[in-house]
Length: 84
Image (cartoon, rainbow, N blue to C red; front, top):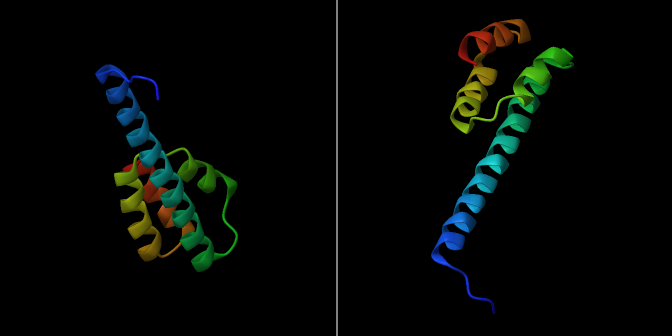
């Protein structure tokens, strides 16, 4: 097994953390869109694109709660523009 320096270990750890965050963001984006589709049916492409452009897991968690409580896709999209 090759020797791994402390700098390499730090880099590997950061890479793993980034991968986990990216995976969490993907899962949350999918959940937001699925909740909206379950509630409202077909969604505007612009709304899906706007959700898919978000990478911050904390913001996506807030949007997931918003997707559950929004009265319409239009209201969600309006809130998305003010929150995102």
